[in-house]
Length: 200
Image (cartoon, rainbow, N blue to C red; front, side, top):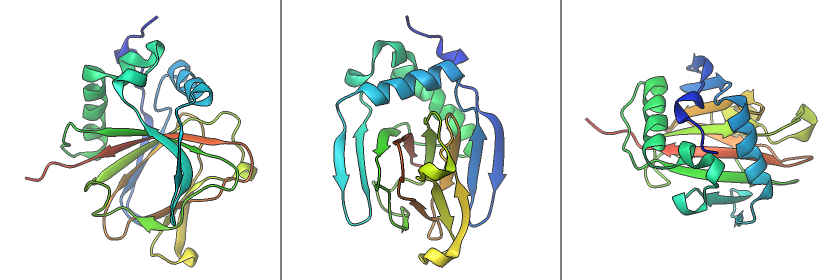
């Protein structure tokens, strides 16, 4: 049964921060039942592709209309993605190109990313919103997002834990250094929405 997408977006408790660079944290991004359905799908699907580079070790795939399961079509297809895009415009106070890219990530034991900066890379995306879907996550599991003030590991300023149905939005700049700590136990799932601001 398809869901009314107007009742899936929640975005409760939006908090804005400027240090070490502009970013946003959100509690309860989606209605809980929808977040749970996304997690269940990511656990079951077999379409993961290995990502193994110098800076990143994970599994991932881009969300396309043809692979979205029936119960999630209203959230991830056509007009509903535009509604989600408009929600991102509200929270970032920015206008975005409508060519938003949604990527699912799966980090297994030992996987993560090195400290990096996406500014000017990845098709010139300017903002990114990460939705975490992880049931039963604990600090011992690892896989948290670290925000750094430089490329040095000693410059860690903040740790964002991948708690189920929470989100973090990053504004890219020359200072937006971040990394995903290695997963120590279990699996870490997330959806990453990559956005490009429209230049005036």
